[in-house]
Amino acid sequence: MKYVLIGTIDARWALKQNERVEAGMAEAKKLGIKIESTHYVHGPHDFVDIVDAPDAESMLAFSLWYANKGFGRLMSLPAHDSATMARAGKRAGG
Image (tube, rainbow, N blue to C red; front, side, top):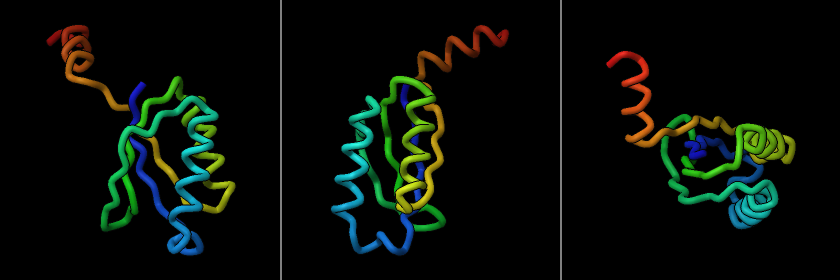
């Protein structure tokens, strides 16, 4: 399942980018999560990742791990492709 992962970076980790990213990549791999792309943004959030996760529980575990490490906060949003959207539209009577 694809997810859009929106995150913040705690100020204590802002200048320790490599350490935070390496730890995050290792934990994601351990949980079966593939980080497909990372984009740094300006505004209330610091980055947006596109990830592929085996299930929602893995995403929850990663979010809990990230917060517990003090890295910041994450929000994960399920992402659906166009084919899934079309099928859902048909099921909804469209």
